[in-house]
Length: 324
Image 1 (tube, one colour):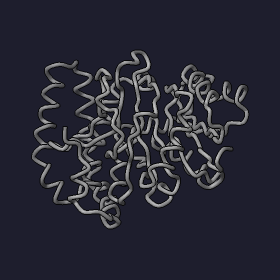
Image 2 (cartoon, one colour; image 1 turned 180 degrees about the vertical axis):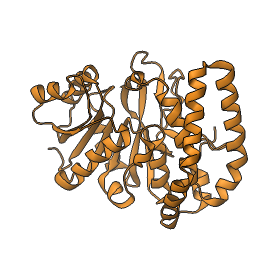
Image 3 (spheres, helix red, strand yellow; image 1 turned 135 degrees about the vertical axis):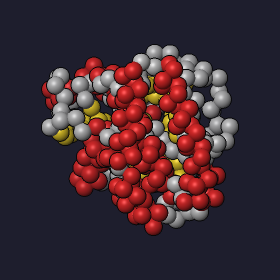
Image 4 (cartoon, one colour; image 1 turned 90 degrees about the horizontal axis):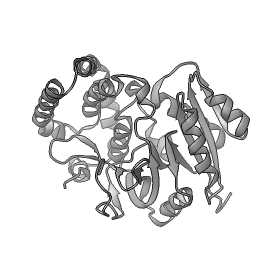
C-alpha cells in the first residue's frame, strides 16, 4: 500500500472472460499497488469465474445466481467493500476497459489535489480507435435536460482537455470517495442498467457533492461489449429509466421548466425510431416507455426522500447542467 490509501476496484461481469483478461492485465501493470479487486459475477455461463479463481486467487469473487444487471451487481460489491474492506476510495470499472499504467495513481493524486472533489470523471477513449472520445464526463444538457456522454463519437482534438467540475461520471470507469456511498446511498437497482450512473450523479449533486473531471486520467473502452448479448436491451432500459430519473431527481421548479422539452424530445426520438430503425427497436422503445410509466408511483415515492435530503438550491443544480 502506498501513502496509506486503499482503493477497492469493483468489476461487474457477465460472460466477459475475454474482456477480463485484458482489464486484469492493465490492473497488474498499475504503478500504484494499494488496491484490491472485487469481481461481481452476474451468473455467467462462460469461464469468467474459473479464470479469475485460477489466475487471480487474491481477488474477491461475489457470485450472483443470475444476471441482475449493472446496478445490483455493483451494489453487492459496494456493500462488501464498505463492510469488510473499508477502503478510502472506490473505483467502479467495466470489464471491457483497459487502463493506462498510472490510472490509479492519477486518481489518488487528483483527490489529494482537489479537496472539493467527491467523485472523479476520467477521459474514456474508444478502445478500437484511440483518437476518438468515448466519454469525457456525463452531463445533463442545459437545453432540454437530456443526459449525454460528453464528447462521445468526437475526434479527440483537445476540446475536453480542461480539468473542471462537471455534472457526473460514467460508472464504467470512475473514482468515488467511499463515504459518498455511505452518506448518499448506492445505485437504484430498479434501473438494472443505463442511466443508473446519471441517476447516482444527480443524487450526489443534490447532496452538494461535486464531481471533478480530470482529462489526464485516461482509459480505453469497448463500449457495448456486454449488451451485444441482449438484443433491444439498451433501447428498452434507456426509455424506461429516463422517466424515473427525471421524476426522482429534478427539483420541482426545474421539472416544470423542462417538462415541455422532455415531451418534445421524446416525440422527436420516437419519430426517429419509426423512420430509421427496424420494428424490433420500435417495439423495445415502446415497451420500455410504458414500463417506465407504470413505475411512476415508485419513482414518486423515492423522490420524496431524495428531495427531503437535498442540500442545494434549484439554481445550483441548473448551473451544473451543460451549456455548450
